[in-house]
Each structure stands twice: as structure tokens, then as C-alpha cells.
Length: 145
Image 1 (cartoon, rainbow, N blue to C red):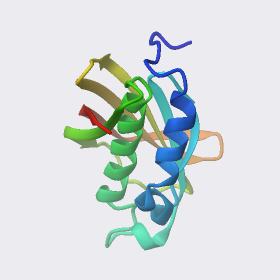
Image 2: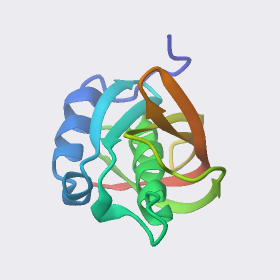
Image 3: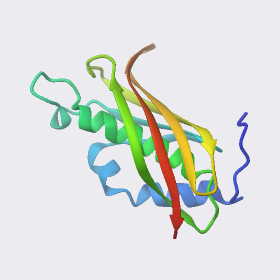
């Protein structure tokens, strides 16, 4: 159960509509699989079109998944008249991103009216095995819609 209460009672509908407009997520193949106030899980299958020279998922693709997960976790707690933008993030790449599937799990650490902080972890998933491949700390800003 989430420790946060959303400011917008219709946060889920609004978040899903916003996510569906993200052409970058569509292009990469990232989907929204779980959502609750202050927590979002995104997933994507491995796609060789988004690899680097060694065949691992590119760091930019991993960072994109983590950033969007953090953004939507924060967005889930924002007022109905707000949109979300990333202000700053730090990514730690912890292991090569080589797996059949990837999961990006983000949770809000601090939900402010204007500035929020979220953390995310990226996992390479192979069947029942998950390997931590990356982490992110992200600062996000609520902006007028």
C-alpha cells in the first residue's frame, strides 16, 4: 500500500492518457504495467535496434526507461492542473543491460507541490531471474498544464 495520497482523484486515467501520448515510449516498446500513487512499473522487451556496439541495451535507452518511470511516479501525485518535467537525474549503470526483458520500477521519495524526488531501479529479466542493471535518482517539477 502506498504511503502517498494522490492530489487528483482521477490520477490513473490522466496518467494513462499522458503515457499513451509518449511517442518515444511507443518507439522503444516500453509499456506501463503497474501504477499506484507514487509508484510506477514500466517494461520493455529486448530490441536489438536499441543496442550499443557490444549488443547490450544502450545506456540512453535504459536511462529513458528510468526517467519516464520516475516522471510518471511523481506525476501520479501531482494536482489535476499540473504536468511533469524532469529537472535533473543521476543514473548509475551497474551491469551490462543484456536480457530478454527489462523492468523499470520507480517510487517517489518526496512529493512536493512543485518539486518532487523519485528513485528508480532497472532490471534485466530472464524468466524468474531479475538482475539489477541500473539505478536513478530524479528531481521532477510540476508545471502548469
